[in-house]
Length: 335
Image (cartoon, rainbow, N blue to C red; front, side):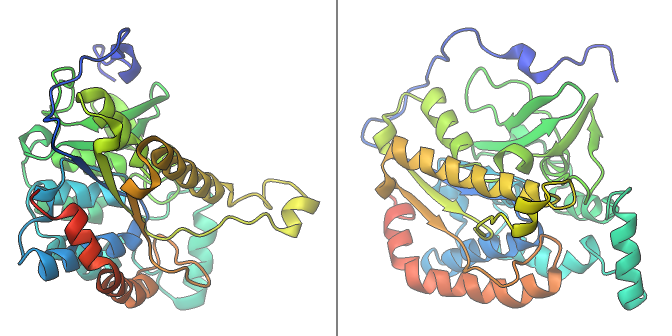
């Protein structure tokens, strides 16, 4: 670690941020995209259908004043901010998902060994993902995008929450020079799946640990960075699947580490519910639109390429067929 590296929190303001002006007659529209691994196929495909059916192939990023995304949602947000079409982002998952999340060799025996190995080691080598992101984003720096972005991660060197922010406010000066690939890898370093990302003296871990649904990251940033009434903010929130977390009989009876091994899934589910509820209370429920695929049984895991690629593109198409006109009217109009 370099000697000049400091905790992100050391630069926290000790006063209220001075909000930048915003036209009083203009709404502030936020696109928020959840984390979910390979299930990012769903939000990317929803956005692709909207671009193709309602925007004539035009970039959907031009219709939002801010984009916030966590983990896989962060990768999609970064791509959109570079005016990469959503269909191309969806195809990254569909064409390369098997490379990022490869199936163990040797069938059932190989899968059993992979599960045992995962008790002590991360499940996947991040080299395939890093290579794909480098090919997609090239040498682009985070501050070069014309979109306002908030991308959650966290740092395990100092134990800090870390939100990468484009320089859309004079206070935001830290992140503009970061390579897009670094930001993408930092937000998507899912524990047990990928190794934490060492970069610049920090050890970045997936933002989904604390903000898998980043809706409030975007809302709070908009409310503090700009002089805008909260009732002029609208949010389109795209999830990868809202599966309810249930406490089983075994959890009730035994209560040990093995019974509660899925507690991180509960933390993610409850965080999303809370963030969504807070946003609706602040802005008004009618100003928040949440879209998720129908629940699957069993739930699709974040590395299950086969089921995700089979079910989620059609789920996205159904979503846009049902909600497309409303979405176009509320979020895609120029007014």
